[in-house]
Structure formats: structure tokens, C-alpha cells
Image (tube, rainbow, N blue to C red; front, side, top):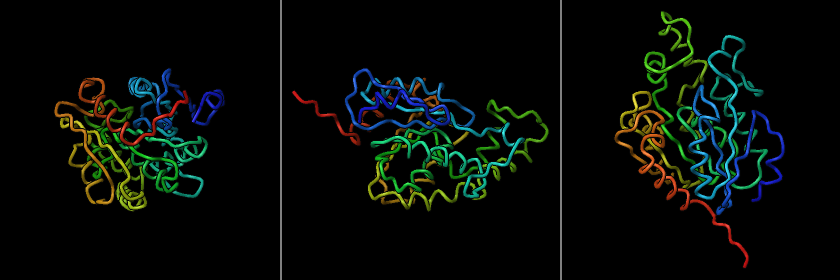
Length: 259
């Protein structure tokens, strides 16, 4: 799929193409950034897949902690929760971009990516990479986020009730609806789960609880013993990049160039 002309178009949520200078594969890498992050914070990952020969697309998720004070996170079809609002945004963009795509998602918004893919029956998403998530134990992760990670929450003494509130605002189902969604994925669907063993926010065991019950999935792990939350590529590129490259080569379709 040639995205050269489409890349000149405007997309919702600041959607933007990042085209490879040496494109070798048909599939597009569709990035979903982490909570309270931005597409710009994925530049290291975008450059990596561009170097591998893939075009990429990234956008800005709308709906942050500050937004919760302004309006309830409710989708057009009445689902309440930031997770579902994110999923609707991801679904809209997946629908807008033609061609086969490989979704590359980070931390808990990877659960939103899974929801969007399930709603579309993975019609043109051929594989999934999840880096540092999602978690099967949402509230402990939010509590650790409140206590240990940089988080724009102004009322320190209210962190415990805020944790409960954010759990509800994320999704009334917390993490539990993800299992029904993964059951909708095609048999042998390829997933690479990347995890740092020193991740205090989303421990590897909590990620395993998401994927292990689904035996029809073709999922594999990239274990990084010294990595923390989302630090894999930054701190351990020599382990991270070759494993991602090998996975992508396995699931992608090389471009056949005419002589």
C-alpha cells in the first residue's frame, strides 16, 4: 500500500504518517501511545520501524486526567470510560486508513487497542505488539501510578479515593471485558508481549493474566530482565530492536518489486 498521497491529508486526533525512506513491507505500523503520553514520545519507536522498512502512523489520544474534571468520558454509543473513548478514537482511525495494519500499543491503552480491533473483527489488523501492558489488575496499577510515577494530580491527600475514581472513569468493567474481546480475535492471531521484569507499574505476571487464558492466540513474550515500565527500547535496544524486527518479519508481507 502506497501512503504517499494519503499522508498529505488531514486526520482526526492529529493523525500523522511517518513514511519509511526504504519501504520493504506492505503493512503499516499503527501506533497507540501510553496514557498521558503523546505521539512525539514514540519517535524512537517510529524511527526504528521506519528503519526496518515499514511506514508508520501515530496520533494523539484525546482524554486525559485533566479532562475528567470537565466532562464525563462517554462514547457516542453510551459506553462510559476513558478506555472506551480511546477505543472509539482508535477504531475511527483504523477505519480511515486503508490497507493492512500492525498495531503497536503501549501500557494500558493497549487494552483500548484490543477493544477497537475486536469491534472491527481484526478485519485488516494482522498482528499486535503490546509494550508494558495491558494489566489484568487495574486498580493496583493506578495506585502505583499515583504514588510512584509522574502524574498530573494536584491533590496529594486524596490519592486513595482518586485511585478508585480513576478506576471507574477508565472503565466500569475495569479490565475484565478484555477477555471477551480477545476471544473475538482470529485463531492463531500473532501478538508480541514486551515486558520489563523491573516494571513496578504493570508487572509481567499481571500482563500474563491477560493473554494466558486465550490458547487460540499465537502470542509470544519479549522478556527484558533489567527494563522498567516502557524503558525497553531506550535502555536495551540491542535486545529490544532485533526481537521486534524478527516478529515483524514473521507477520508482515514483503513488497515484491518488479525488475
